[in-house]
Length: 189
Ligand code: GAR
Image 1 (tube, rainbow, N blue to C red):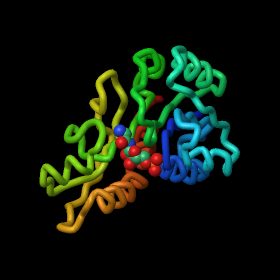
Image 2 (image 1 turned 90 degrees about the vertical axis):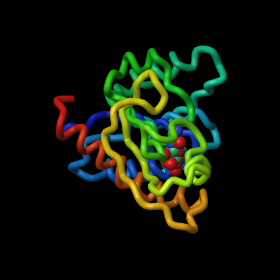
Image 3 (image 1 turned 60 degrees about the vertical axis):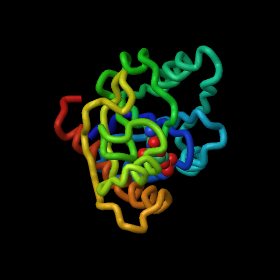
Image 4 (image 1 turned 135 degrees about the vertical axis):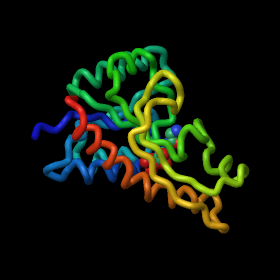
């Protein structure tokens, strides 16, 4: 099996990146992580790229031509698939056009509920009974592309933001790899 050359975009902790790296090292997992892009120089996730000798690039999204820089790097490493794993920046339309149906994102809510930021505090405020995560395709509208996989759990009475985040991330670490397996099993990618 030829593994698809994949770039993972991150901004912070990188627990999903770490998890995807460990899956991608398995023989039958369909992707190889060939590049990590971070818009945050201090993202902890960069340490995982270093540890596993994966090329990584810091992209300063405050400079005007940063989108070209992203595309050039994706071309340079022959990237054919993109995973957004805690990337807290909106992807440009040009990138979406270049990678139609080839960019996926993980979001810490049961979309279409709670698009955007601060999902956990909004869930608690809203007295939700169910929480979870969604892996979806990325399109031009924020957190609105087709869902690939969703995983959910019932909120406990004591669940605060921190507990919700922990429970959600535990599910994310199952959902992201499952979604990738599903994509490559079903499609003539
Ligand atoms: C994840 O929980 C992911 O769902 C969320 O950021 C976290 C990153 O964690 N993404 C978003 O909120 C995107 N809107 P990680 O850096 O440990 O993988």
